[in-house]
Length: 397
Ligand code: HSE
Image 1: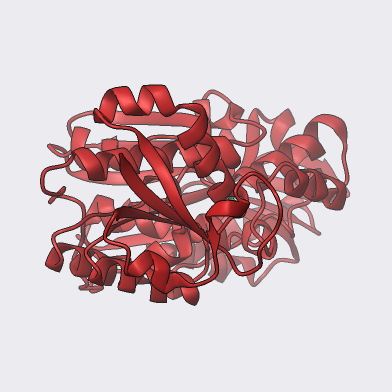
Image 2: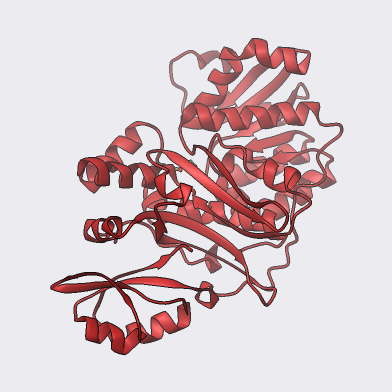
């Protein structure tokens, strides 16, 4: 019998307990022994199927030598950070879905895990049930990764889909996403792009091998997005999606950011809807590789956590290759990127042309919506100062 503990019994923690119970036979077959949840750390006891396993004392897990893997689903960096360090120090593997903790302290926690000869695994922290971190670091290991971009937040993609398809109001669509267990405890992190920002930091850390500090990454969500722009974009053959992007720059630097983008409808990412996420990885040998699946929710996220638990128990003695340097040099402002821009201005085509030269007009209906040629972010910001800008976005090309 192999025993594990879960810390936190929210959406993901409950999902982990369910997957361990419901898929017990498959898991036992693969591990050669049954897997059992021995303890669940909670702040408040509550009735239900796991009542007998609950404890509010972390030391019961820390000091129990029978518990080999701890699944951290507390979230945030307070207690989760403290208990993760203590569990690793106690020689236990730790598995998590906690993107904030990995984005902010992953490098340090990986170093601690290495020192203690255990694993710190976090496949569930990006893309929910989509296998992305293992393929990025293992299957694509022979590549130089030049870019990673994708729809990294299920809640905002769900909200956008509901608003565009059925005309739902933002607040109603958000409430639905919360009821389905997609949103963060504080959904501001979803709708303001912060959750996607943490995920793009983790992807960039692994893709480029250097720590990307979340507070250096510009993050913009969907709260300022207007349905007017969605409709103009659709008529012109584009979809608007919230993307996280990490790019290797020509001079050797790197950048990352989160913002809504216009995406040409022929790009498969343009048609990723509801809670689904998709991550595109550009390797110099593979070209573009796309990963697609449910990016949030109880069971998809738990699936990734339990797979990491199984990997800890099978790996002998541990996986060496996951990790990155704490050197943050070479991170540059995303305004360095050159791309086409979408603008909607209060003004005429002449105003647009005076600022940007030749532009492609998408709509002239009192306001003017247009696409620029490829320009740098600095030029876009500079020229926009001469216009009354109602909306602006990058175009993914
Ligand atoms: N709130 C997150 C999302 C959960 O909506 O994508 C999965 O990380």
